[in-house]
Image (tube, rainbow, N blue to C red):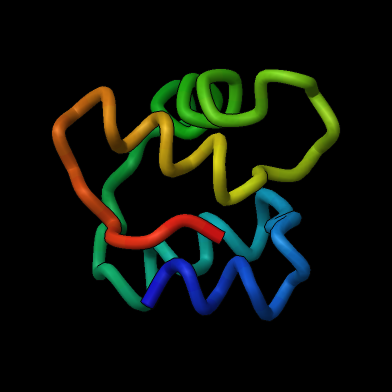
Length: 71
């Protein structure tokens, strides 16, 4: 599901689309601004204003969330 979203955006998902997915697809609507900011910082290590799937996958691995295959 999320892997397909990243593929659609050529592995570079901008913040708007990423948080849109979290809110509309995953149904998580109650993130505070500081939580979004913190998540952006943790996921976008290089500050490119987008999140790469491999960075997202590494982040999830740290919480023992397995997304399946890598891109």
